[in-house]
Image (cartoon, rainbow, N blue to C red; front, side, top):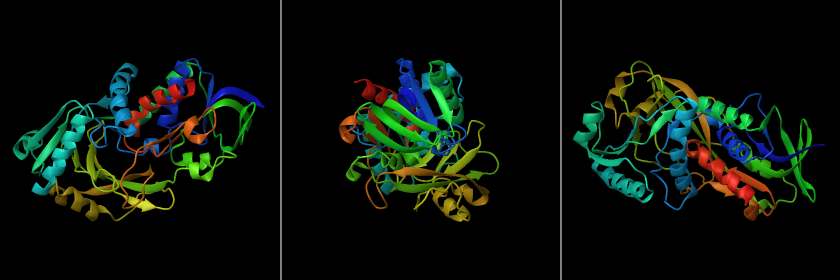
Length: 364
């Protein structure tokens, strides 16, 4: 039987960040990924936005780790040469009734310690973005975009340079705690480890269910919210990211940019029973209706299906949003095990901070 100090399961952006943070502390570790390549799941199917930390209560881990993660992320991107742009974001009110929501969002951002925030009137917003239709906007100067795959490659490179090992095509079948440690049964044979990190995105709740003896009530209930993205043909109309005020289940169909300057819109919220990365066809008019509230000229432009992602949510349709579920030995009742569930937006922004949190948990 192979033996190693620490196993990290999942080589998406969160698992890679955990592996890097642990390896930087001299931990001997093996990173397992069931797919034949890193980052092929939800880590590569999102808006690739660097969030400022506007939306959630100050005391939530989502908020604290987003703000901390952003502060770590920009220097990391610059140092490692990962492509990014601090382009800024406008959250827009498209009616007078939404101005109150915008003011609440500004107060939340201030309470969260987010810098670079300004409330703008409609004329000020249009001075920045002439094609924008709004009654007011909240400007977040610290928001930006990045190349998520380059980020994951940089994390992998640093983790491996620090001694971490990666095993691709490795599936976890069972986890058995015992006096000598944790026996993890995989399709490549059993592995005995002392510490285990479950950072497998959509699969984390299922992996928790494979831990022998773990009470069922410990398992987080996960809901799946598919998000479709449609791309815009032709030139992008904006230089900032454009977001509506938040809506139930998500942040609304927003405009984001890629690093080549192309524009895409999404994600919507499509609750589903199983994960599917196929774009739902026939949503062009529905998207145009949502987009038209802040950019009426979309009516004359062409939208085509681009890609889809799936958000692992811990609250279902009609329920209020909840925080990340970061489960350590105290919550799970198993020494040396940490699991990260419900890591949706702003998980990409928070990735480096999440890695540091996990490393601290396992060394405390």
